[in-house]
Image: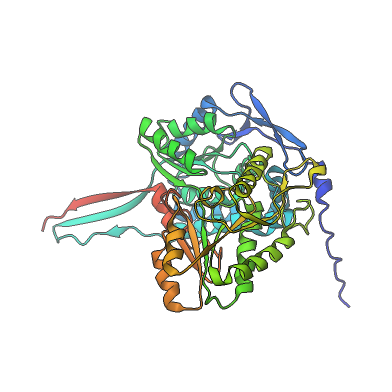
Length: 503
């Protein structure tokens, strides 16, 4: 008879949180360091307002130290000149180490920005590890080219790392967004200076230590926490940063382009905001699935997703039926304790974001939208930042809640009359990140998808995704693409070497 080990007890997340010791110092040249002037800021958790610890307030001197470390590491070749197979092994160990530290990283993510612990484990940690492993595997699969020149010449087209890459990532998916920047940059042989959001810096700091433990040489990855107007601005203006990847608001993305023009004309890639349209036609074959999909996509991560399909455009004849189904689905997304594995919706990132979301809800009501569910702050007794899942009907496309990115759990249902009206309203936005078409007609699905101005168009689904496909938008949703092999375009230079051959 074979003895079977007893199943492991589920983690006591509250106990682990109570015993957590936060190290908020920067990681520069492989070492934990205080800010040069010793300045810090306090980080509090949105789940209940508890103080998590003091975070180094990086500024220009700290960014400069990190960039100098990154430049030394790049120039001496400790990473950039390693054989692709050697870099691949380190990236794969890095990925495995992330999975080994899954509980620790997930807890940091949940305490820092409020997402449910179950989602942090199943989505954020898994996606981070997958991204790092995938780019590691891609390293030795990318070939250079030989141009079709005359016999008297040999033209080699090679892809080289740009050098020092600056990365500024947002607070909504701290680990995933960091991995999207690190994966291609490190795989290509660059060194990186990362500035995480001051609202959620903890997991990035720990990730840098894990990278060192996995064998990434010191100085190749440096992490400097701090405020955007201090550390972020200093990184974007630095004369020795060769390329900058930014994910965040459109307002700040404009400044990134200005900083590039004011400094060394560094290449800047922006992944910015969105107001994605979710189009449901009256020939949709499964209205229940459409309703469940849009509700789950918007309310996941507390609505703090740039690609959330918060504009639901529905053909007028089925608008009430769809609204009823979405409202019923919203009831399943009531906010709960993020440290409870059963919780589906957690806290928004901080009190400022809470005020912003509630302000948009007030604006929707003031402008005549009909509130079907939610609309209030929740769990006020906890001291945390929670908002009920909110559904508006009777919205028209000129309302504030239909035009501006809310970054919270709010859905606006907008009726349309016909296909032309649906396309016109969907494209009537400064953003163009993602969109969806729900229709049982193959011709309509293709026709509308072609007409929509968006970086990604989903057909009869939403948010199905993989690291193998590019992510990014058009218009004021940004430029360039994260994910897939196309991301290498942002962190590499093409060089032509033209050789004369004498017969």
